[in-house]
Amino acid sequence: MAVQGDVRDLDIPLLISTATFRRGVIEVECPSMGTVMLYFQDGRVVSVVRNGEILENILEVLDTLMGVMECRDGTFFMENLDGENVEIPEILGFDANQLMLWVSSLRDEINHRRTGLTDGDFLRLIPERAKGVKDNLDAAFLLLSMGELVKGTTLGDLKRSLSLRSSTVDYFVSRLVAEGVLAVEREGKRKEKEAKPVKVYVLADDEEVKRTVEVVLKGMGYSPEFVEGGDPQPGMDLYVADLNGKGFLWANSLFGPFASRTVLVGTEDIKPARFAYVRKPLNAYALRSAFEKVLG
Image (tube, rainbow, N blue to C red):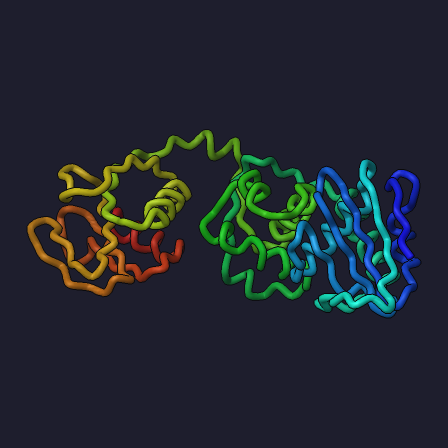
């Protein structure tokens, strides 16, 4: 038996909470979210699928359900799958009523918290503090956003990179800032600082090398101007070479051959304290340390 209709005609949280069939599915089509499918088994929500992707991160699950609760322009389809030869993915195991109470509680917290942050504020993870995070949802958020936060990113860019609603990102960022896990540099203060120009020669086939170099330098307050490829260019402030196992002629000295997973960072005037090796894949903090070493 199947039931379908418009979400405006039915309370979606009530529909989910009263889904008492042994096996079944509720499908919600919402323009802002796409297609969300909730699979039930013996009164438990066992999986949530959004636009064909099975969600495993609990925060993505809760955020998706909050979006379903707020959907006011869409359709739903509920079907009892008892006796049907349909394989149901079992990723979760939440009692439907308890899950909806959890979603409602988190939704209220998000709606009542004022962050005071703007999309232009710059965020960076403090690794030592991140190790002490105990809250499961904070940890789930960090798991989703770790790559961007380690490199450093604006709040607006972080929102664009995650599959979470903006209000959810605002909420967890503000929590982690308050807990000292994230450092924040206000947009106004960043604009007040005059970025220091730095000329950078990059020899790398991997675009990710240049992208990481750019992100780290900008996070350090530099305004990089790039020259790429060919022979090392004179007059550069910084040289970055993905050695690719070929060695590298630098300031008339041959440093190599080195392993292909090594990046050489230095200045044209090679001195013991003016160059460093950074292993690939590039770690933003290791690269920053190398830049601080060679640029003084």
